[in-house]
Length: 637
Image (cartoon, rainbow, N blue to C red; front, side):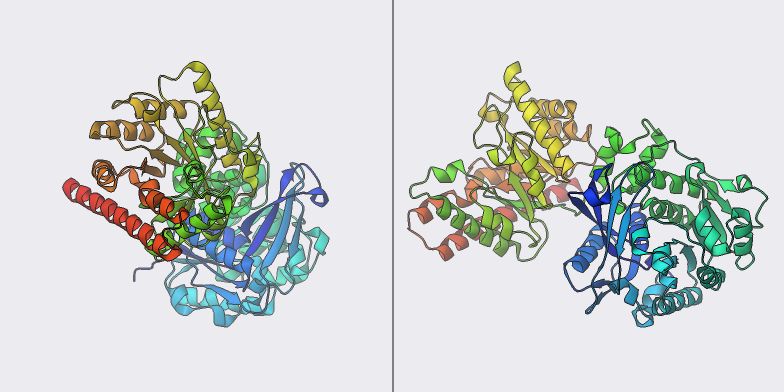
């Protein structure tokens, strides 16, 4: 029978609040980064990034953090059929920090938390039957109720021909043998814990742990003796992680030295953060194990994924995509601090972005200067009008994917905030309107630190009026501003859209836009999106697309701007652009709202009429784009 899932993980799911400052006490942390966490949750996400079809069985609270976990799992590509919502308990929480190369303090907030209420009724036989493997972590053997759920899942896995795996994942304080302040502790001897683990080890085909974790599983602080005790009760393949020495696979009798086990290549990298490294390791191991690779190859995957985790901030965010892993294994280590390897980080960023946008139909009403020039303008009226624009966009979107807006914060704040959670793609401008050389909105601050308060689904958009013939002073000033903004966007995990309009500066030909694109790549700008003015000839589009693809094979794509062109002119430009797959759609504003705004500010039409007319105009443009793309695809076929 064909199975749709490669692996189901079972156990902890929580929210990690990672101290943003590095090198200080947890007591002194001033800000935190929020990630999903918990070993099985991390492993499910890491496996999904490597192309495996993964699912998670756990519980989350009926509150904001529980919804965050569920939504983030979906964004990572993890099947959430097994994620139950607990109506009574809160989602687990962990606060973590990076003190130095050896100290990583953490506090578990898990008193009667949602995932520890997992029970037998939460285990769906149909879901288990749909998986090639089931992976559990040790924490859920520490409680009678969660243990019963795990044992049921393992029994069903056996019945349905799925392989089984255990991540020992020993956290003494989660077993009640260490205090709340000892969250960092990885080993405390406990005969009770050893007995509980040994009663289940025979149920697994694969068991993974550090030397200390095998110490608790085997009941001895001598690693070889502990492994022999484990081998006495299970025929599972044992993977023993040895820190800087890598890991070994033990498939039969335990040898007289761990050096005689099967090994994979290691990677000489800087240790920055060990938290979550074991989960990254297991993700890579699963990739090799389930793909049928030999243990040295599977351990190479595992060691590489562990290396990524050790060198970056956070757990799940640190794990590689398959494209990133393949690139790394082919190229090798250039510098030991992987998070500062620019080429590698670009691939990490661009292949792990959340969401897919194969079509972009964007209503752009981020204009400020154009509204300020209208008779009857006031900031409050402009804000109210932009809320009408949002209503029009949502009316056309009607809950469907592939629609977006461009909206500013200065005049459009209420509309911008209201767009959150609607499913719209949201771009937000940074440039001071009409500026050349480019200047940014003052609210961003001289270092662009204002981006820190932006919603994480906002896309940083900047418009630069530039031309290949610009004088050196103008070019240098504008490029420095774009570089500063781009660096700040990446620092704040925000996608970046660069809009360039050369025709407002000087004459253009088929090479003008492509020349500018290459120049921005040459100075280190890697936009997630490009916003380009309509180009009259296929050759100009071909040149622009080539300039992008030769520098970034993972770019999101291009959207076409409107420049207040009539609908008929836009339709003609769409027909040319739509034949290039990298052009995902359009971002048009004044063609949709300009005449409506003039009449609304003058009091000639009411709100409902304004919304209806803008929605009709936006819908017509969407139809024109969709039709142009469909015809282009038919012609290409």
